[in-house]
Every structure is written in structure tokens, then in C-alpha cells.
Length: 130
Image 1 (cartoon, rainbow, N blue to C red):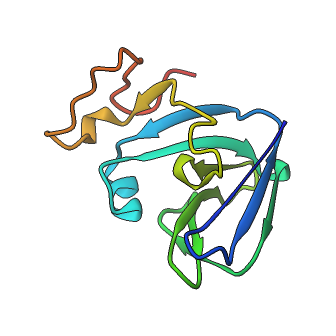
Image 2 (image 1 turned 135 degrees about the vertical axis):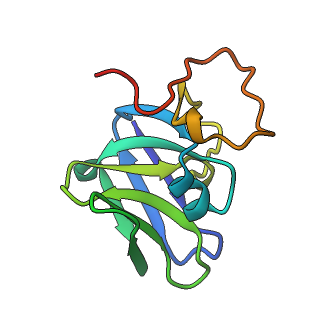
């Protein structure tokens, strides 16, 4: 399966091959700040499954993660693990924005108070058990 997407201005395009490792909504404070929204809904893919065209910029938001965005329009595209294993692709940046649906919520201990999680999905205070 190949799914494609890109940024708001079209300067960055990407394609993901295969199925995601997982699809989660992260409510941690760093994701809130990085995305400028209450959470980061993303599909996690091996970095080797991603092809990216166009100019991006990166911000190291922690020792383990970089946030990747379009240099032109600023669209937040990926959470990129520095160890080379995986990248979280923002669900709303896929051309088919309904291609994936989250299967769980993580870091709900940092969820914004007014966000109501009534979708019946599993919720974890931090990361789910291994």
C-alpha cells in the first residue's frame, strides 16, 4: 500500500509504503506546543518506508525527537526519531485525510482539560505498556 501527502503550500510531498507500525493520538505537552493544537494525531512508519521531496526544516524538541516541517509554509509534517527507526506522520497531511484512524490515546495525563475522550479507544497516562 502506498499513501501520499504533503504540506499546505505543496512545496513538500511525501509517500509512505506499507502499513503503519501504529496510529496514535499523543496528548503530551511537547506535541501540543509543536503542533499548536491539543494533540498530535499521527501514523508511525519506519523511516525507510518514507520518501520525502521538497525542503524541510527540523527542530530538536528532545534528545530523541525532531519535529520536521515545511520551510515555506511551516506545515508540521513529522515527528522524526533521531535514532533512525521511525517517523510519526501527521494524519491530516495525507491526501486521504481519513486513511488512518487512531487506535489509542497516549500521554492523557497531560491532556488539555476541555478535551473529552469519549471515542472508546484505550487511554494511557504516558506510553502504553510494551
